Image (tube, rainbow, N blue to C red):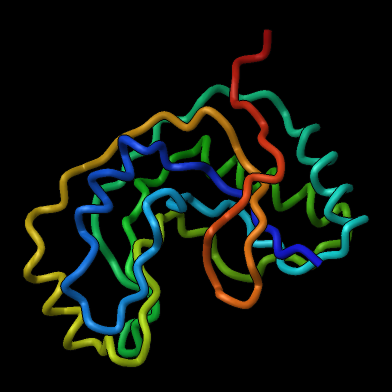
Length: 182
């Protein structure tokens, strides 16, 4: 049973700068730069038949131009109990529209709705208990000013992941080009 999610790939040249932030945070399990992505919609564990239906249905998404995305800051999910360090994506109407369309497509297939608010980001590290709020605050304070990273997203992707690890490596199961209607 595959564990699926949709997302936007972070190109290697953009991931290079983010990869330089790795290290110096006890309790962090760093994401490999090759696995950096912006999650559009976590789907979860599904059977092979539904996985095939999802891949086909996502291919019917409306044509849209490539997206220019910008990462502008480091932040943490979890507040007093931090669980993930991430690079924030500047809000983009095109990205929000794409995410909403994926949500609608998946709901039509009977996938339960995602109850979390869409917060576009690139996860850099998952944090264990050893990375308490003080350690995370110290890590963030020692970082230089975050250099804005911009890239063009040219396709949306259906990914699979290993369910036992909670992270990569991720496998591209299907890709959906972002291109102007021609």
